[in-house]
Amino acid sequence: MMGFTEDQIHRYARHLVLREIGGVGQRKLLDARVLIVGAGGLGCPAALYLAAAGAGRISIADHDAVAVENLQRQILYGSADVGRPKAETAAAALRRNNPDVIVEPLAVRVTAAGARALVKGRSLVVEGTDDPETKFAVNDACVAEGVPFVIGGVVRWSGQLMAVLPGKTACYRCVFENPPVTPAETCEAAGVLGPAAGAVGTLMAVEACKILLGKGEPLAGRMRVIDFLAGTSRDIAWKRRPGCPACGAAK
Image (cartoon, rainbow, N blue to C red):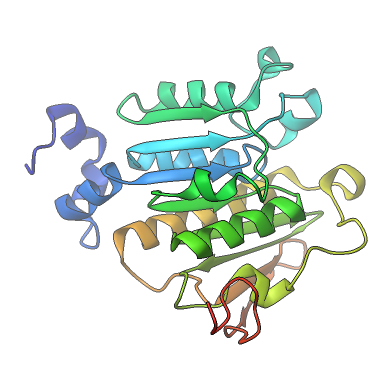
């Protein structure tokens, strides 16, 4: 079947019988080159589900080390991993989950200076850090390189996520324009429900698969805002901003 090995036919059996995926879609996933920026509360579940789904090449960029405070929500790590580099530890966990996937750890901080080289040639990027500067760097680099991406955030009991299809939909700068002048609220200061991070990260993986497969309606041009405590969610539609320095009409 389309060059799949016997193990792949069994491993991805539930995808192969899914009408929207099948053999053609699974081959798209296996050929994908995905960059995950941030191996934390959002990046861990997103990476785990994308690896399990068979996203063929996954690079994980995170400069940090595992801390005991991470274990409440960052599900790729255990107590024995405290002190180890996140990128390498996450990569090892994904390989254990699915040896079919090639995983590259990148122990780097993603900055405006280096982001474009990191995203170049990717099929898709998933951004799940809690650092506004990193989010804007990834946005600008992906827009410049024409690489679709999914971006999200979570704090307390709330989360948000959106997808961006460069040249077609509003980008992250169209929504927020610039990083906040005052420090953004973080999980460290405000707290976060562990499963809320897992839920948002999982939804980011769903959006990533939809984009890679070219199926359904991704959250492109829309931001989904979820209040897990109230049990509500809403979508906010955004249009491209003509004066956006990243994706404005002059670009």
